[in-house]
Amino acid sequence: MSKISRIVLVILVIVAVAFVASFFLRDKSASPVSVAENTDNTQVVVQLADGRQCYTYSHAATTEAPYTVSEFIDMTITDGVVAGTKKGTQAGPDMTNGYEGTITGTLSNNTITDIFSYTIEGSQNKEKEIYRASVVGIEKLRYPLTEAAGILVPVTTEDFQVLSYVRIGCEALN
Image (cartoon, rainbow, N blue to C red; front, side, top):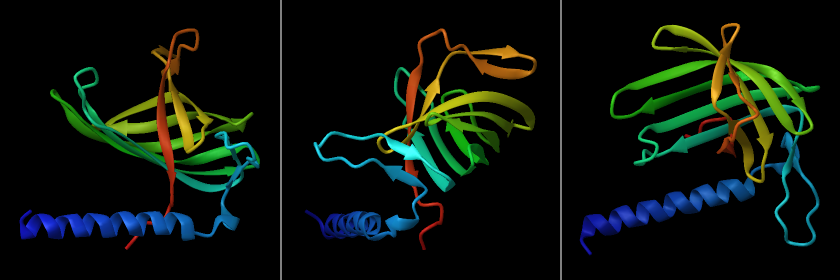
């Protein structure tokens, strides 16, 4: 193994150890997501609670889905009301762009229903979204969309894909 390969490997190991350590050493008492007591070693879905929380989603391009997508959600839940921002990028064989906007909605039965009002390539759009709590964060229920009254609305009678968003810290690491 070359000297440069060893150095890169050492750096990757250090970054991985720092990431794992920061996850286990963070203050869990201030977390706006609660996890039910788990005594039988089964995975438990988190309960979304009041407070600020952030999530990330990424998808590398594949033959079936040829776009690389990266998204970041920063939201606050207060007494069942959800408000925040969402921004992302997508890059594929025929286009590359970024988008950002606001999310406003409600939390009920561990499910968020919101309207994502966003700008993409100078165009204003709105999409109704549905997220549910999961073991590691939230999952977007991605249904086929139809337009109704100027808003893209999920067709909930159709099959959907699950997009997993992982909960992350809201503050950038330096």
